[in-house]
Image (cartoon, rainbow, N blue to C red; front, side, top):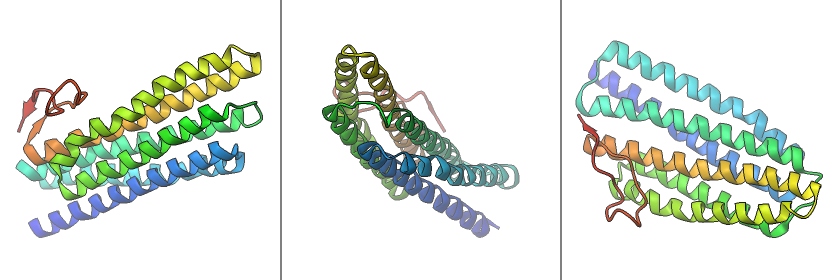
Length: 233
């Protein structure tokens, strides 16, 4: 009975890892769409979100079934809980890629600032690496890697602040410039939130490994990158 339970856990975890791969693929594709102002590629990103949603529902339903039928305890319960929360984060990350794709479609014909676009592309590359690191931390139960995620997120936050300033300056030039700038601020915000979700996945990894849940904080303000534990199990 327990062997079958752990096989089910492993299968659900495999789906989560596949979802993470889908999210990274979506992010990289939507960044290519941004770079080329490619509406067709942006449309592909929007359509592909259905696949992430289907996997989200499968994970959700299977996790709830495990909770209802197996009554997991101790580390198994933490494993199930972590997968449930990571699943939610990945589904939302897919939605953020879709929002970026929609913004690209709405702005593809507008005059653009190449310097701002390059900063957005760098944000996207950083967010993809951060997402890959968060899932690596999960699959390897790597506490040190999980705790390093806030530091890896710092460059995304810095780029976001710079892009907002640059986009505001660009938007002051003309009405069309303002519309494009507003769309790019939205894109930047979605990329910043992608990074936040990846850090949240790291929090779930730390909970899985240690049994204590703590919100990660800016590593420049907390030596170990962690706030004080809020609960334990």
